[in-house]
Length: 386
Image (cartoon, rainbow, N blue to C red; front, side):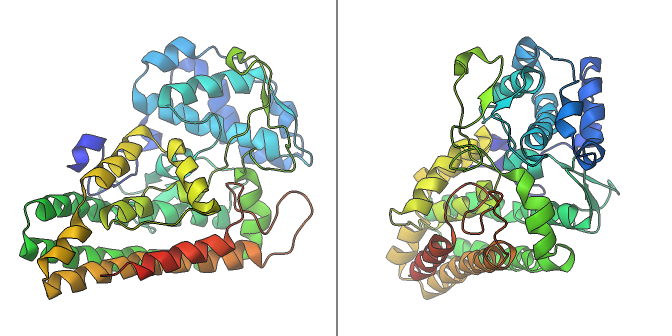
């Protein structure tokens, strides 16, 4: 395995290889881009649907099938934000998505083999740029390009994830090398690689610790979270959402999972590398379902890691205490990351008052109960040291 096989690099990890502001779309997209760029203004009027309904209906079937990948991904960023704003930008959710949003959204999603709504890849992985192109991808040098309402809390929430994904790039590269080291039974090399990986996990966890600095739990819950929900297991859309003008859906409501950090591929990649398993439970079923929402190359990376990694088996069989200790230290780092996620789920969601508008404190943005099972998965992770 090597990262380049999956359109990835050690400097960017799962982040896009391009920066969204560098990708030009054909002129037919000009009205949609203008609307997406002014989405905050439209939402503030209280009638965002009125404005979005005025967009021309583009037939993107042929274009999406043949356009460069980065153009399709950029177009999907803008359209997926508008779709979410149309559904959740006013008090009551509509039962139908108009054809001028539905048809382009489905065409873009089909090309990328993703669901036709906002995924983590559009919210985070493809939705950033650097101020200084000669400086690293770091919190003091990146900005969020496409917003909903905008503001420091929304930006910081997304940019923390961008910075984490960038900091995880070397970890993912080391993971590939660890697969090879275990396969060739090189205990000293594997130990060195794990020691280096541990240092990078310190950086990732330090970034995650900074979430509360500029993203307030109340603002997140009231002004950020509502717009990233999906339409699966959502009481506001019990029959899903009808995508007007999309023949393959036959006028039937569609239920798709909402954007969530659980669509990030970092933790499942580590579970695959360290051969960490989880018992059957609702969260595992939900996470297995979310795998299809990831970009294709990221799915392939995780799947290949699951198939090829024998790192745990090798660490056990070798009897090498240094290798075992280095292995366990990294398993604990992932458990630490999960602990912080659990703490944020409690403070940013569970402790916020229920509003009665479908913004349920007991249900994650993907549409499943989370607190009990997040703790369970963290404990299962931590228990699988050797």
